[in-house]
Image (cartoon, rainbow, N blue to C red; front, side, top):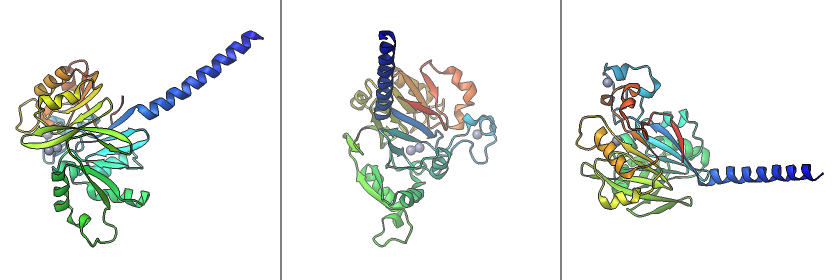
Length: 282
Ligand SMILES: [Zn+2]
Ligand SMILES: [Zn+2]
Ligand SMILES: [Zn+2]
């Protein structure tokens, strides 16, 4: 029965290859979930009655900017803004291996208190990563978290100060990209072929080199009109064209950008507006 024999062998081979492929995907792909894609006030804006703030399209409802990254079965969140609790619940994030900060602005840090839930469930201090200035600001704004004598039940974190050089979290290499947000240095991050940059309006040529070959690029774009500390839509698109990634997503959007369904039509083929809950993999 050589025919059956060969077929069976092929089946087994296909099964093994399928298994290796699935394992390979789990080990090497980067799964990203946009937890929030809105600017500091979020969209809708309290008291605003504009058409974007009144829109019923779920893509026009933007919590404060943050992403979840799953790589090699590790779970990282970049920035814990004021909507952190809601974002963890919505995306059913059950484990947090590290919280990595881009910068110290409140829309990226205000939710730190809610890491308590992970303290309780994981029975461990949650590792936090940030530049020295970010950690100092957290110490001021969350003094009770860092007090020598702590009230029972306050968040417990383990501080890791990072500099502008590659670091490792749970065996994963992360490359910071130093960008400017008006005059404030902010870290973007590259993990494998995924790069995330929020709250920037300037990237030096030296730092731009770290973006070479990135497959997916997330970049902030506030609105069409220029702004003192964020890229405008035109500035962001110009930078994306220079990097030329396979796909790019715009985040940290203001209600001034317009309706998701209308303005999306203006974008080049490889660029789209991110929205809350969007999942991507690269
Ligand atoms: Zn921000
Ligand atoms: Zn509005
Ligand atoms: Zn900011």
